[in-house]
Amino acid sequence: MTGAHDAGPVLINAGGGVNPDVQALLVVQDDDAAIRGIEARRAALTPRMAALDAAQRRAHERVTSAEADLEREQVKMRLIEGRIADCRQRHDKSVALLDNAHKVKEATAAGAQVEAARRALAVEESELLASTRRVTDLRTALAAHREVLAQVTAEQGAARSTLGAEVQALDAELAAAHAARAAAARAVDPGLLAKYDRVNTKRRTTVLVELRDYCCSACDTAIPLQRRPAMSTGMRIEPCEACGVLLYFPTAPAVSSDLSAE
Ligand SMILES: [Zn+2]
Image 1 (cartoon, rainbow, N blue to C red):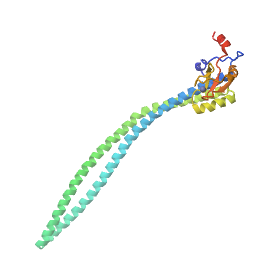
Image 2 (image 1 turned 135 degrees about the vertical axis):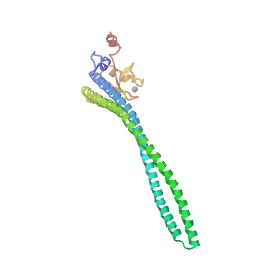
Image 3 (image 1 turned 45 degrees about the vertical axis):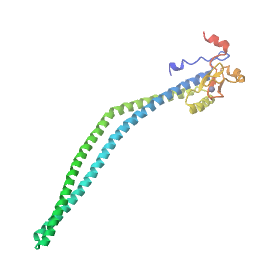
Image 4 (image 1 turned 60 degrees about the horizontal axis):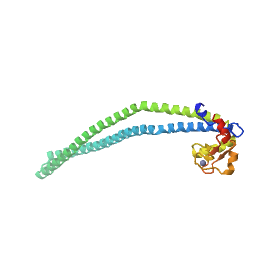
């Protein structure tokens, strides 16, 4: 723990001594503030990771959707091919009938069937041609989407490893901060620490605040007259009746604060 804790107020009670509980708890409080700072920096990385994930997901979805489009068109193409085979069979059958027709009436009917089969075949063949073109286009699109996905993945590699390293560094910092906090907490009276922890867990902000002119410096509520003498010894740490923070008297009463200023 460094300079941050040295800047704390000098605590002098009426007898001229420093309140060690307040000092020890202020160290814990500084450590808690440091922990919250690291946690906030770590939380700030989450949207950056989410943005990478979203870009990757979008590129992946485009590939999946292009694959589905291609698959659908290929199924359609196979159906057309099946219908063309049917048309050819009907056509060949009609041609055979026509060849073997002995009567004009039979020949006319068979000729009409040949013509109908030929027309149907022409329709299916033009559909097959269109479908073949669509398959080619969809294959091209799919290849392009796959390329984009590969590009996004490659581009994100560096960003992801940078981000990962940042997360790791912050986790290490956080572990060190928790260890420092635990060590500092051992110097605090357990009863006082429990009181502090209760408020700290709820509020996640500064818990131990000083009295300024017998007012809470968090909410500016004055403490009742009858509590002032006990507080002014500097040895009492009590909750603010208005906002719940823990209050301590930062310096000796007026008489000795003049002395400590020198
Ligand atoms: Zn208050």
